[in-house]
Image (cartoon, rainbow, N blue to C red; front, side, top):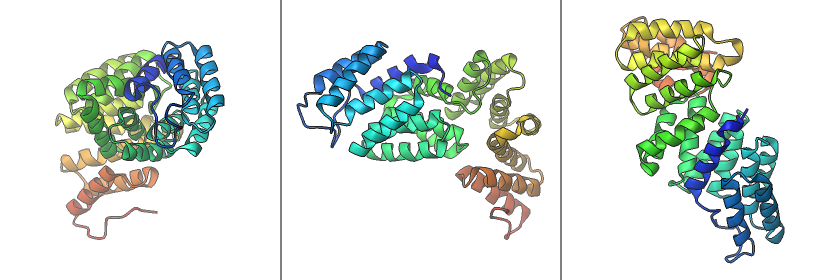
Length: 322
């Protein structure tokens, strides 16, 4: 569920990355009568004058019915005002007119807010393939891959966001994006703030800073399992394998049944910790298989399963149990 407080940050990201409503192939004829209206509507949206922005986008759509841009503007407005079903329908209509990177990014965001993360990833991967410099696409894809539990792809997307924006700006934009679409949103605001920052610090390869943020977040929500998993990974990356193992075992017990995917992520991390500590590769292989059965094929899980099988000397070990 989108949180209304995040809307100003998202609008700023969308407009900073895309600039004024851009013309894309198939968007409409050059010099379209909608251009001036769209520019004005974008300004009104940036200033959160939603009623006036909607009026202008609708007028632009009436003047240029084959132009996807007014529909995308309306869809952005609907996201900003937390009307996600309407945003989805508008994004679909825009993409039926023109398959643009901006349209795919916007629908990817809508899928993310609907917590349909596989569909979001599909749209966003297509978007950045069309436009590798699309900063909003890479920022949003980072948040989506974190939610999908795909560590390798989350780091790749963050690296691309940093390439396009610079690392500091990438952090500034990934943090509110992940805050708005976080794996466990039903937590106190202060805990979300700090724990999401901790997750972003892990993406940066800064486990000490991640540990600091996670510990502060857990002060506000001691039973916040996803935050504790971030703390465990920070311990792991600093070489404190005993603490990482103990924390991950507690995390696995703490997740409720409706968060089985997050429990699977913890299992995959625990498998890696056990192997690094030289412990039972059979348990590590079992944990990795269980994680794969829930999450599907993730590169880091396949890697840890392969390592476990090699450590166990079991050539028949790789593969998912059913």
